[in-house]
Image (cartoon, rainbow, N blue to C red; front, top):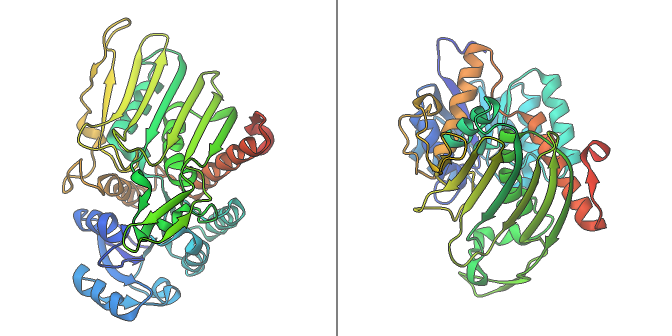
Length: 378
């Protein structure tokens, strides 16, 4: 693809104009970045596809994802639909020889994710998985500070991540499907996947772990209809783990937090500490969306104070840092640079596959009640 002299032309699958993550985050992000042009949109119904094209300024509207992927005016296919449909849609885009950005999770199962990662490698195209917390300015800066020895040798990390989803045991109709353990979009996959991937990005991979999964809210009421739905997916994850470096990790990740939903990741080292925390204005959505602050000790034994984030970690100027789609815009800025410079700094399908395999080990530990080595189970 000759990208040096023209915009990257994007086709967005799942671009429902009224209620979709694409409309809330991806479309604003793409619109804010000069490297991209939205040329095609796809939804499941002709009327919504046409309205999306009109509202988002796309020249082409589709209900057939394969036709969208094969269109000559689409360079990059973005997949932003329910997880169960990812394998088929991503596979069609790869078969068409197009670059692909897929929302996390990559697929409903690790087996599907492995097949997509293999297909992506063989296709030779660029592929990006939407683990956007890595490109939040605070996370990226913390990664570099740890690598530079700012806290010395990391000894431990403590994670607390609570979302407001399901608070009061009521849930909006559009989110009810995520209560199903087979949806691929429950607490473990979304809150757990994003939070633990950010932790691994900053501190490195896990060596072994012990995990517990629990359903504390087995029934919910659908807000719009009053219907009662059963929850089969866990809403609490407790994790005790060791990193490859030898540092120890404890984590509690849960949904349905009635008050003070927030994220806090504390990193302790031999020379000081770092704390990544959601701002007072947010916190209910999780690390992939919430605006974050970074606290640190400027000298050994000093007190925690907020660390300013250098401007080089903010690649997007047209989106506010507290906007819902800011980290998505940060994600899009990196593939554009990668395509033009030949670099590979974006999390790809192989990174997504590693995240899927980590979640499998967590499920296995929870099911067996035994501590598991990742080397033996990945």
